[in-house]
Structures are given as C-alpha cells and as structure tokens.
Image 1 (cartoon, rainbow, N blue to C red):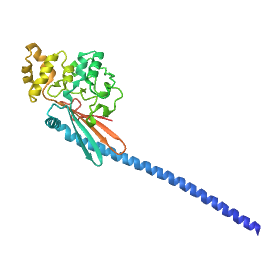
Image 2 (cartoon, one colour; image 1 turned 90 degrees about the vertical axis):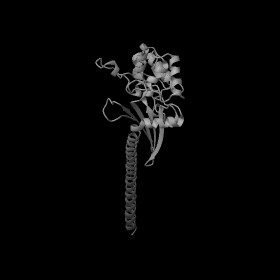
Image 3 (cartoon, one colour; image 1 turned 60 degrees about the vertical axis):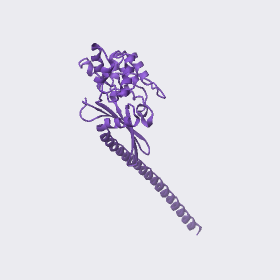
Image 4 (cartoon, one colour; image 1 turned 135 degrees about the vertical axis):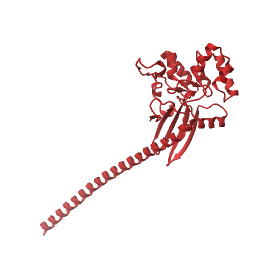
Length: 294
C-alpha cells in the first residue's frame, strides 16, 4: 500500500514538474511573441510617419516653391521691410510641419566669394556673415577639387552647406522658430548676383567688396528704403557711378531672384525630419528641385 502511494506521489510530482515546464515555455514564447509584435508595431508606426513626412514635405514643396516670391512679398508687406525668409506652419495628418521659404540670391554666394578671396579670407568673410547669431558656428572649408575644363563662372567648389560649417544640425542651419540660422546669409546656389533689394547690408558689403565703397553701399541701402520697388537701373542712376564702374556693379547685382530655397521640418511623435529644397532657374540638375535630407 505504501509503495503504491509512493508511486502515485511520484507520478503527481512528475506531472506537476511537466506542467510548470510547459507553463514556463509558454510564458517565454508569449513574451517573445509580444516583443516581436511590439517591434512590428514600432516599425509600422515609424514607416507611417516616414510616409507622412515624405508626402507632407512634397505637398508643402509643391505649394511653396512655385510662389516663393509671393510669400516673400507678403511677408515684406506685413513687416514693411526687406525679407530674405518667410516662415509658416501647418498640421498634416497629426504631424507638425514648419517651413521657411528663402531668397537664395539675397545671400552671399560662397562660390563667388571664393573666386575673389583666399581660403583664410573666405573663412573670415563667413565668420563676419555669422555676426548676431547666439552661437557662432565653426567655419571649416572643404571645397571640391574641380577639373580645369569648365569656365570659372560655372565652377562650384562649394555645393552643400556641410562644406562650410562643421557639426551643425539642420535646425542650426535653417531659421526655424524665428531664430536665425547659419545659412541665413550664406548660400552655395544661384547665379552669384546678389538681390540688392533684399540683401542685408552686411551681405552687400561682403558680396560687393571691391565693386562699391562703404559710402556707396550706405547710399544704396538708403535709396532702396525710400523706393523698395526700384529697379537695378534706377539704383545705378541714384549711385551716379562713372561708366567704368557701372558695368561691374550691374553684373554683381540683380533686382529679381531666380533661386529660392525651402526648409521643411516635420515633427512626429518620436523624431524629426528635415528637408532643404532648392529651386534654380535654370536648374543645373534638371526640372526637379534639388533636395537635401536629414
């Protein structure tokens, strides 16, 4: 009798151990399945946000770039002063999009500056153009080595902002939230002619060095303040430059812009995406605007 009871107890103990083992395996399996499900859910949510970011950014690009001049002029009418940038914000699909339209020809073209200055002189000009920023960026020039074939007027040793500054985030480059960015007065794109009707005085000083004197730049700024819709010819008449200086001054300036930029920052639940679109006329890379993504 005692032996039979012992055998039954051993069987019950074995069954209990097996049940506990099965429960442990099942629990581990359920944990793994739950973790994998969470990973799939996170990937799906991220993929959804990336898709929203892509199409939201493209929608803003298609809306803003074709009417960049109108948006800049509306900003100027609001502030009653020349404006190089016009910001905006919109909510799309639960995601916040901040955007900034820019007049790239109202900035100092670094490729044109590089043709007139040594590397140290160019670095000094870039540092001067960053005056007024809360934290001045570190200038580190990394020009491309260009073949000797293309004419100098078409050479672009600097094609991205990363070749000018070290370690800057897109939010430090673009002027988001009303804070001026490192790219607010500097550009790598456009014909190189500066839009004298919008450019800040410091941009005019750097881009027109050797073309206009400090006194003439002050006179130009004063004249455009009185006549904000003036043409380049009217500005030249107001400066009363002699014939041999009038030609170089007209070649260095313009009263209309053919290169505009658009910064777009998309803010999702878990991260941010930034895009920079460049629209040049003519576009050296084809019909689609250039795009830089972060």
